[in-house]
Amino acid sequence: MNLPFSIFVGLRYIRAKRRNQFLSFISLIALMGMTMGVVALIVVLSVMNGFEAELRGRVLSLVPHAYLESTNGSIDDWQSLAERFNDNPQVLGVAPFIGGEAMLSMPGVVRGIQLTGIDPEFESSVSVIDKNMLAGTLADLEERRYGVVLGALIARHMGLTVGDSVTIVIPKVSVTPAGIFPRSRRFTVVGVFEVGAQVDSNTAFIHIGDAARLFAMKGRVQGLRIQTSDLYRVNEILASTVASLSGEYQIQDWSKSQGSLFQAVRMEKTMIAVLLTTVVAVAAFNIISILTMMVTEKRADIAVLRTMGASPYAVMAVFIVQGMGIGVLGVVIGGIVGVLAALNISEVVSAIEDIFHIYVFDPRVYFITRIPSVLQWLDVLRIISGALLLSFLATLYPAYRASKIEPAEALRYE
Image (cartoon, helix red, strand yellow):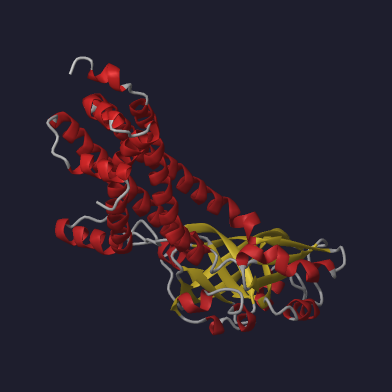
């Protein structure tokens, strides 16, 4: 009884048993629609966040944050350049590389790859390849031993294991008295890695010394791979060091090679969020229908309230409270269920797979075997705020119509 008049009457209207069963049914549909919309938005956005995190963890863990290359195609004294970048406290590691497109060849099988020559001593500072070895280690890449580390999918496709031999052919030629021949060399598989991404199917590593001989670099390197403390601030972190270099060097960050992939994921996340918001919007339209019918049903009650001194604004507030009651209840239930579902979606799907013996992600086809989910509370706050705003906007027109009812006109035929 200590509640304000409009809130008290509005809550009474929500709790009261309605004579109109159809109106009660529409109210239930609106409540369920709001709940389902909020649940769907929270779960789907969390799953999309999970896929983005998986993509970032798998792809960018192997791709350096930035590449430094010379405009003339090679760098002679890479050690001095590396020292200048290492002086920056936000640079975690610098490693030289020589790379390019190549082919793996063995009797009856040829496969195109991205070949990269690395220095095992420095590679661990710019990638996690050494932490994802299925067989062998990066230390097994020794100069003049001509060893190669392959991605798991390449090795599986070509039937290669540690100890097998394979020929690497690069798109450069050697001129000999016998003619012109593609440059090639026999290598021995010394390791197999798997990070669970596309790089497993197209990437191979050899020692940078062997790569220098294969690509005829003669003690030079193609460029430097640089790892920083924040991949989203790469340009800002490296700006001062790059500015101090002469114009013969150019730097390229990860967004040039991988940015389009992450932009596509974010765009997909945005479009799904927009589409699922329509579910919440439908529930909000149901609130408009409910309140419109309630205003028609309660015309006599509204007239009595007006004759007892209730102002038009107080009557308007009564129906806003009633409509918001349905919206708030649906948002609260949806928020709780959605958060619980997002936090446990992987376990729920795994249980369903075990019961029905079906697999959402076949491990023989996909790089991941579970549905990833990363719940971001900012997303939850945005979803709840948006749903509440739509609920509030849905109440305004019916409530405004109620405030315009004239007591004498409404009571004329009562």
